Image (cartoon, rainbow, N blue to C red):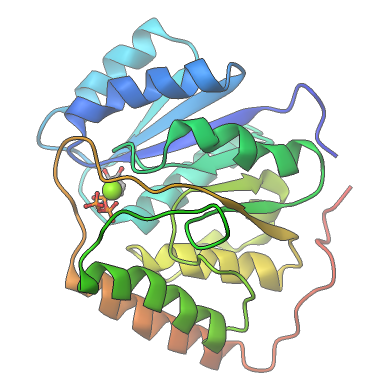
Amino acid sequence: MQSATASIWIIIPTYNERENVGPIADAILATVADAHILIVDDGSPDGTGGLADEMARTNDAIAVLHRQTKQGLGRAYVAAFRELLARDADIVVQIDADFSHPVRFLPSLLEPLRAGQADLVLGSRYVKGGHIPRWNVLRRLISRGGSIFAGVVLLMPYKDLTGGFKAWRATVLREIDLDRLHAGGYAFQIETTFRARLAGARIVEVPITFEERRAGTSKMSMTIFTEALRLVLALRLTTLFRRRRRTLSTDA
Ligand SMILES: Nc1nc2c(ncn2[C@@H]2O[C@H](COP(=O)(O)OP(=O)(O)OP(=O)(O)O)[C@@H](O)[C@H]2O)c(=O)[nH]1
Ligand SMILES: [Mg+2]
């Protein structure tokens, strides 16, 4: 059960998000007053990292993790998870820097964790009340098709497995062997939810509206799609005879 003083950390991965990083941090702190923010920047050429350092200097609730080169979203998150487990975080949230994940949904993402009803909360575009923008066919195929494919192959009864707006109880992250995660890019979202489920985490979906990025450019590419496809099949093969644990072993 989470106490009222649970330490909540929100991770913002950034690569060339100069216009977004300040406004999103402000919006997060205005929405979740007790939150801390960890910005993880992969040496953005546009100077996002330096800007983040300035923000951290003037605000104790903000910290920055710098990585030398761009190694993909998955690697950035693994580094951030490690850092926050070392800082004894209780709750860890993933959110994109570009306002695609509207900050106003943070309270509904945190609620099942605060109430002790879930260990992992997925912000879901495909449950009742969720929404995506008018995407082209390719983008829809990657997102919705990827979720359906992963759900069928990996036997996961959730509608949105490719989304990146997620809230974790830190005990689940401790149960996942972060060294063994394969995905460098966005397939990371599928892989981590799958590993959490194998570990016996209670997983729930809450509806979110997904919005087009406000500023800057996308890092989405076709390799993301093929990586996800390969990862789902590899996960199925390597865990074919693995039974799901009934509960998290570290549950208090
Ligand atoms: N640290 C780090 N952050 C990354 C990397 N790749 C993407 N990001 C961040 O991850 C988040 C999601 O990336 P986006 O480019 O918005 O990808 P997307 O949301 O699928 O695409 P759009 O809808 O076009 O924005 C953003 O906050 C990016 O800045 C990376 O290699 N390293
Ligand atoms: Mg985006």
